[in-house]
Length: 208
Ligand code: ADP
Ligand code: ADP
Image 1 (cartoon, rainbow, N blue to C red):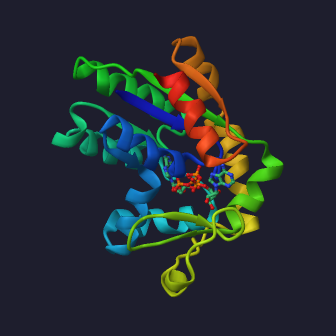
Image 2 (image 1 turned 90 degrees about the horizontal axis):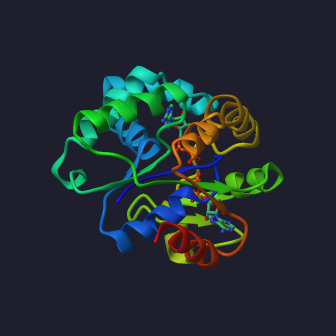
């Protein structure tokens, strides 16, 4: 299974990806997580990406495409993958089509998680993650256990101001992927409002 999750920031892509990769036995490839790891490791790519990411903008296409190309060449991605947060521009989507075609591969599905903008800001500003396990929490909707409170991370770009910039980037640069994948007959629209269990059920029913 080769699939992609698209949707605005905070739509629940990471939360659902963690569930689906277990079910399908494929790696979860999150470009956001890869950039955050590069920043933590102090690599040149991390340093280049940090300012753009903190402000809520998009990292340059060439950097992202190069990083994903390398990742898809690793053994665990040969039999399938779930891409979360990539592609985010039409240029990236075209590059992915070419990259897969060169390997004689094709995408099976693109799931679009639809959540209205007015629900997004609250999801984002109360998001917290556990660096030890990668688990994603929400201070109201999925509160973390008290004993891990000390180690929880609040992302620098999970402020209201950066969130609004990210929503603008989504509207202008990522939303054009919807007709792009619709034309390829790959797009599956999934309502992202409801409990995480309900959304997993909707996803698995459209993905098969
Ligand atoms: P979210 O899921 O909340 O939208 P991500 O963790 O996917 O956020 O991404 C965080 C940030 O990393 C983005 O706002 C952007 O700066 C950068 N980033 C991640 N993936 C891409 C991509 N495919 N193209 C450009 N920038 C990206
Ligand atoms: P994305 O990867 O699309 O940016 P996340 O999976 O990180 O989104 O979710 C963003 C925030 O919303 C997190 O705090 C998460 O706990 C919360 N969240 C995820 N799914 C739901 C849901 N179905 N209902 C309410 N909150 C949710």
